[in-house]
Length: 121
Image (cartoon, rainbow, N blue to C red; front, side, top):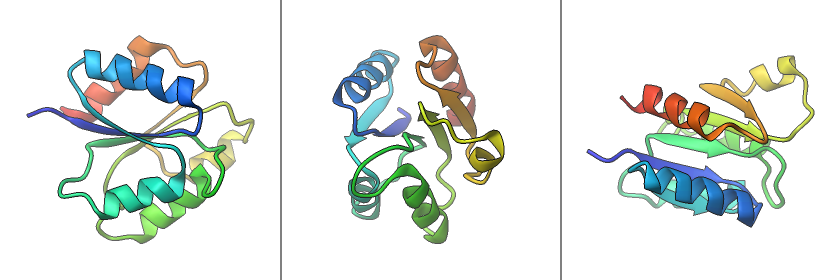
């Protein structure tokens, strides 16, 4: 079964680059440009993604707000999140996100793919 990934990032170049990388690795990839669109996509989906790649600094609904809403929703709370951000938040602040992993941009592609594989398999 093909693992599904939802990329939530407002930077078009970053989103496209990660999408192409992960599609090449055999993942099914969807993109959302902010947290609100991601929540709408998740709540309307027939099947949930196996992993969410989440940026923190976005317009409309940022990554912090998205993660709180996700954790508050019993149907979405169990979907693992990997935070991929350029944010300068402290490690203690970032730990409050309860993410499966945290990567600071720019992220090493091989390391990211290995982490996703370890979560999905």
